[in-house]
Image (cartoon, rainbow over all chains, first blue to last red):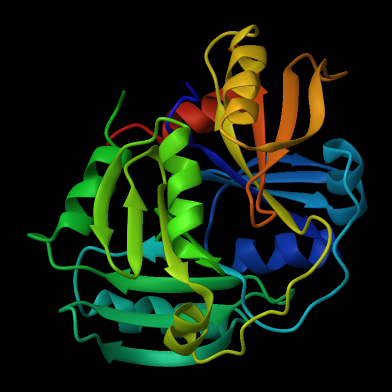
Length: 144
Length: 144
């Protein structure tokens, strides 16, 4: 069995210093800062930045070519509905490219999207506290 | 300020039922199972699967074309060095495509990589318990 964990997300950075600078502007705390490696101490999973060619070498895989469009998203879940708007404004002020302004979703929550300078997509989401998604997130971030 | 959280990773699935089946074969618990949405209750961040075209529509972005190579990785951090090997064997048995057999890393840990059937890359990693990475992961998954 594979342990049911998702503990680190590593983005293959094309320009690590500027990507690190962007996430620093979000107000996120650097837990590890080295020449070619940066780790932000988030709640949930840790976010790591690693040069794309080194990530590819580490995984014994080719590096992906720059691509247009979304393949996956990372989410920041906030505690209050209104926080979606304030967090998106902060991401925009830091240089995030907003692709979707905050809207109430038909499933009862509120969401918005932005992309970092290398087109990694983030969703800012509020989910109703009595939803199965809120329960899954609470369990995921509870101590083992 | 943007809350320092990474609470959900959503993969845009080209074939959601077969991708869901793969992660089920890893032994991962389904927290939400709907026709076009699946959520696995992991520790750290939650893993969601959502049809790629619906993810793109939700984010107001084009869907990425199928691409070769690695752009990012998701990590499963295990508690013991030997667990890298047993977890990788389990991932392989479930149909994971192993790109890197377990090796001891020069930074003191042990890692391996596999890809899911849609070429999302996972690292299985053991990091020394006295490392700054282990500390960051412990903080990320501690209750708020």
